[in-house]
Image 1 (cartoon, rainbow, N blue to C red):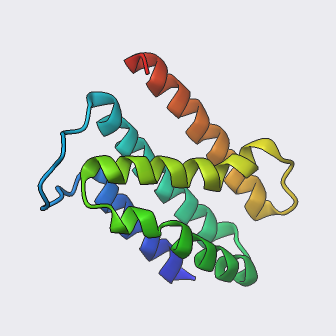
Image 2 (cartoon, rainbow, N blue to C red):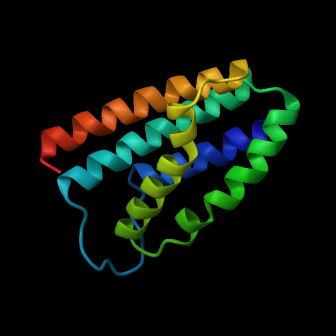
Length: 130
């Protein structure tokens, strides 16, 4: 389902630094800016896993789930709101794959993305003292 991958790519581009045209409440901290790059990379990896490893049924179900779960990111008015929404989405979406034993090859791929994401997020927090 290339539509899902396209949706993730569009989201990743918006996370990467497309400037929000709305007035900003505050600018992002260096940690938050680096996190948004990490979030964009994670979105690409999720999209690749969906495109390459998921069955048609998994693509359909994940597409529905992700479109609903990503709504707060699309509705965010400021870069900071995007940061908060992206972090919440990735923690909720990848968290179960980080904790549980995968049952399918696609779930194994998502577990790999989750392990990478949470490891990189920990390094990022350590580097910025968050």
